[in-house]
Image (cartoon, rainbow, N blue to C red; front, side, top):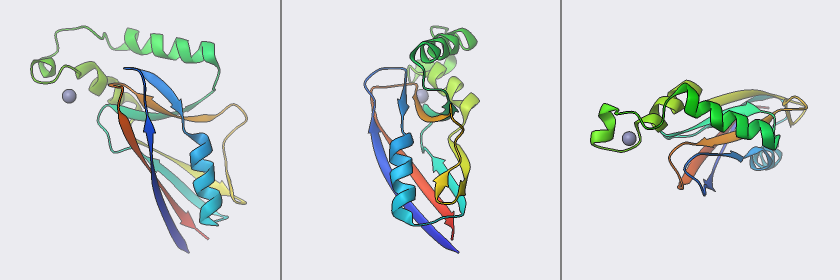
Length: 136
Ligand code: ZN
């Protein structure tokens, strides 16, 4: 049983956007040499999260539009009195900050239409992503 860890950063360019981090996660898995196990992807942020979904531009637009419907962006939130980003925190708490995947025969077990996205909710910023692989 082995453990392999590596972090990387993603620079975001908008207040709210999805950033495809799948290629970097796959590179880290290949570098680890681990063939069977669990891959954990984690972001240590309160206003950025992770989702797994289809990388289709119109769907991404629908996703971003729906976020603003689920949680109104310009409401008079208490947190906005000290830090003008309450909606970013609230949306982030829906998605959470980590995702795990089975690692099978050295490959991330993503479905055909699945992509790992960093969800930026209070950008632009530089975000940290940690990948931990446990297996053999
Ligand atoms: Zn805040």
